[in-house]
Length: 622
Image 1: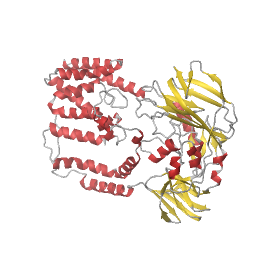
Image 2 (image 1 turned 135 degrees about the vertical axis):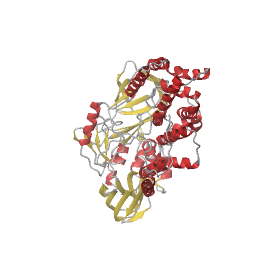
Image 3 (image 1 turned 180 degrees about the horizontal axis):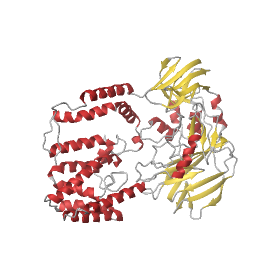
Image 4 (image 1 turned 30 degrees about the vertical axis):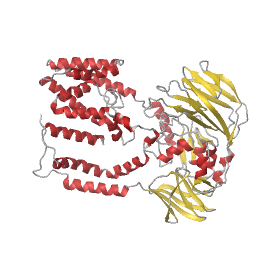
């Protein structure tokens, strides 16, 4: 979309520069090839746009629309920043001095509006966020403007008034503490002065800083190191079954979108992932927010989540949830997780479930199907526990002050605290929750607390999309008794208040997979998501762990049944007692319409793609 806007901007500029009147016919003539190109790509664009509008995650970060119309008085979109255009001071000279040149003045004003008013970036990003990376396609147009201005400075008499000079000096206020930026400004000034004195080699001086800036900007990107990539790539050799899910705990952020042979995963990092799944992941099953945003759903050791999602196999080099046994080095398997598809008549009222508070929701959700019903035949087995601990070791620089309702943490750098647990917690799942308050360094620094390898993070206010995570939750489990808590605090000063600890026996959820009716069949074959049979003992619901959205079709005994959203986020349907053939398919919404549009685009290209004899063309001059 940004590229199309660049082409449209350049077209309007050329028409104005060449003094050609913009008639409806001329605009239609210009838009025709663009529309044909869009139509040809319709088979990809239309379903993607549908999914984007249905599932985009900007709702997780509240955006004040009025602020998007207020110009941002920084230069991140244009100068130096690697997440924007990343250009140098020379382009700023081109944009500002160009305001004095009649033929390009309007184009310069238009580019300045796009660069500095966030609403444009917000729209071009598909209404997700106002990030300036979307403006990168404008770089050729910005370079063109810069060259045009340099040419005019040399051959035309351009007088700079005080307003233009003040605008040219604006970047100094933003970058006066950055030596590279100041050097760029100095060299630009010298280079242009020498160029105006007919020293053509000065143009080489103007090239030095863009090259240096590009090199420095590329160093800002956090690429995966080669040795880490080699470690992660070896995971692809693990043999996995496709009738269950698998997860990778090694480098979860780097392996989040890694897939293999249609094996199901629980993790995803995308701005347009399923909204219901994202809310289930963070707000219902209460997985930790371990990075700066809550858009990414990373692999984690929450045994309730792993069990519900049918994660039979995991790869981990440290933390291993309860129930998983090692089958080869760093590969663990748990046969007691729920199937990907099953039937159950253990129902629980959706309205009553919403009245429950965390963590009583965890085992209630795991052992039941949350649907619209009056049935509430389950009482949570989670119990609050007064934990008995003693300090085993503590970093010398870690300050802990007891408060009336918690503790104050004060440390100048990352600190560790190890506690011995002085009670029997064998075969137990431990749940810890507390509120994070009075964070001193919240404006610029992330605050994180890790317990037994599970990390929660509150992002700084300056983060691209602050996660606002002030309620930390930890679901801890292991095959051995939980006899210690290894806690790691990030630097800063902050309060931990209303600390609560709960426990529940693993057996309460361990054998639930034996109580449901398991679907037996094949997955991901010939475009069909699942195809097989199920023997249902009692009337109930067919339950899946596929995130609910438009496009699914469920066939029971070759007849389509009404799909429903179960367990707050997943696909399901009513099913009666007896043996049934079940088939589940997914077809992207708007796919048929998109295919027709693409075919029409190809036909239009065939008939209209070539310029007809005698057809008027715009000739470039100058």
